[in-house]
Amino acid sequence: MVTGFNDAFMEKLLAPFLWPGAKAKDSTAMTVFKPPRNSQIRLDNDASATFTLSDGRKLGYAQYGSLTEGTRTFFYLHGHPGSRLEAAWFEELCQRLGARVIGVDRFGVGLSSPHPKGTLLDHAKDVEELAKHLGLASYGVLGISGGGPYALACAASMPPDKLKCVSIVTGMGPADIGFRGAILPLYLGFTFVYPYFPGLVKWYWRRWEPVGRLDLTDEQRLQLILERLGKSKLHPRDRETLDEGVLRMHVRSTRECFSQGFDAVAQDARLMTSKWGFRVEDIREDLEVQLWYGTQDTNIPLRHGEGIAAKLGGRAKLRVEDETHGSMQIRYLEEIVESLVARL
Image (cartoon, rainbow, N blue to C red; front, side):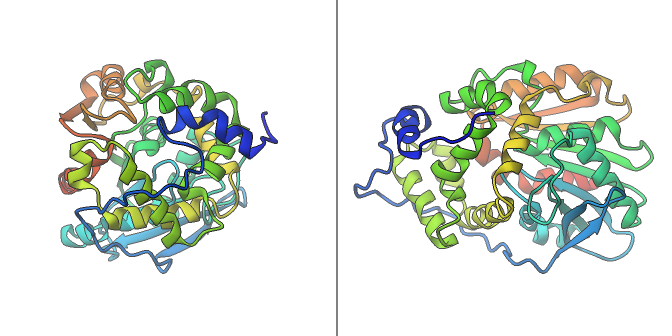
């Protein structure tokens, strides 16, 4: 395990790879990006609760949308980094559809207890146990970005009479697909750093990324993000679709993610990019898995959607659009959720 990095040295060393063309702690004047959208997404903690699992750990979750008994329900498996609070993004849409979404914290995130030896399949068992606790007769699963591996773990292990549908949006697939097509920092990170160097992962999120700066207010963290966006070469799709409300939600959600420290994000990184403990090919044949990917995605390249689809064969329904990682999620949000809920 790599620990004990000198922050100043690491920033000088890695700046050219993490943010090409930028200087570490650049204090020069920056153009602040103004997102064209500003959705109103709730940021409070009122929808959250905890459940005590059979082994004594706590599982944090939050429910949004229509909460009446018998409502069509799906679990939302958050991005990396993220937390249960991301599920608030779907609240208004779920209310309109008469559906419920339940966001679940992963190991050591937010309200969930740490589980250092936990696996992707262990998290799927936690979600299954929560579903039983809530008395759900059936349900679906939606995983976005870093939630993709966890959604596939659910597909591989949850009871057929309970799990009715799975949707994955710009989600990471097994590491053997490879990360060609990702921008250089992510290619290096996913291929070499995430699986093997947890200390460097923690340093990166604690010191380099604005969302990890817990010494700042959420407003200050948001401002740092907007400054970075202002000096970056944004893809036209992102320039058209970036949503300040979604960014505020991300800032709030990541504060929750890091509330117990940075061990959880390092564990999450390792689990996503190491051997999963199951084969995608072995997911049951009667379960359709919807896959939503963008040709312009340089975070999780299209090859991951295509690779997952190839492993699933006829079980996969791959939808490809001319979108980026973020614009795919924002532009197709309603269609993604409507399609998922229709299968419940």
